[in-house]
Image 1 (cartoon, helix red, strand yellow):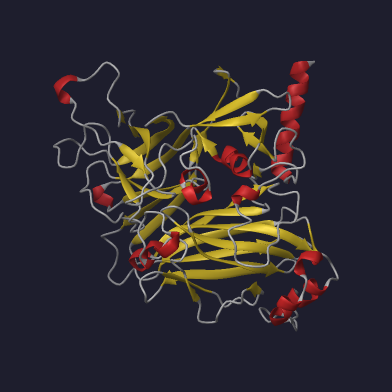
Image 2 (cartoon, rainbow, N blue to C red):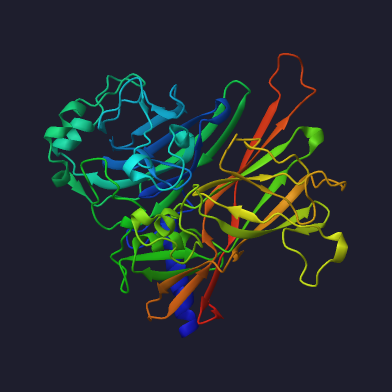
Length: 493
């Protein structure tokens, strides 16, 4: 009977993840949620990042839109966005003349504060001056990072807020305009809101018009992020990913549905950020790479820790709590050591770690792999010159992944294609998220790190006809595994 009950619980939990549930935080594989995470934006090397969000629901919605720089996820711009039913909002992040980044949008959807038609520059005030965190203080720090959007509430139908933000059109494409954006400050918006549904979906794409590359991806969707209205009227740090909450939780403030690939763990956490971390936990991260010199190929992995700031930033609480080894500090790093195994396309295996039995004089010092930022761009360069910025995204938040014993310049055959198994549970200490409680009160520890992102590669066709674009690009989401234990015993379903 206990086995049948466990299977029944797992089936119900899988159904909740797929359909979206206000009772527990879950990564929804169907792409709809109350909160969205966009792992990467950049304006480096002539690139722009296009971003969109849509409201698929029947009710209007207020959404907190927040842009975070990549070193330590400090906020560089945020505002409240008002989406009427079936509405979508779009914007573009571009390089700013002052050396940073700026957001430009010609969308008619209401925002508070209103966005200038010429766009708005990202600000360094969140990490410079009195807000310094030990990292760089120049405006250039805003040039790459990540984006989060959180539904603050659904707008009650027939309310003043709904009437002011709902587009009024005349039957022509793109002619709908909300009639009352300028009057929103006179509205008691908070009283016009109810608990939001899991209706948001979004996407972004890094585009370089000059050389003809485009790297699009879907935003992660967090279903069941909140069981309450989260509205705040001004640009504030909250609500953020710490605000996750669940009515279902019996041993904390938020419940997480953690998919293991073969079942689901239902775990309660005392802190909202831990519940969000739980659904992102990965023991290993796996993806491919293409680095063939004959194809002019290069690969970047975006490896983003969406909740890292809550464990390493002293301004948000005690730094270096569990999970990550170091607090964020000068010169602007919080290093976390991980391990990696390379596999070529013919079963050859190479590692950043030496064999357990040693390898004598043929082994040379391998480069330790450190992911130092909230947003990391990992370059797969087994035999290339080690320089910044990275080849695909032009990232300065980059680290280089080399197999053990294959340093740059060594006369060995290049590993120009294959895949990598990134071990996030071991390296500079043991990485694990503790404190998750099952309904029976037993504690489950998840090994690894909370991570999201994707692999992007570019191929340059040197034989293209004159005047023809010769760049081909691809984007592929990471694959992962999760490790679970109770008192040292395997606990994954």
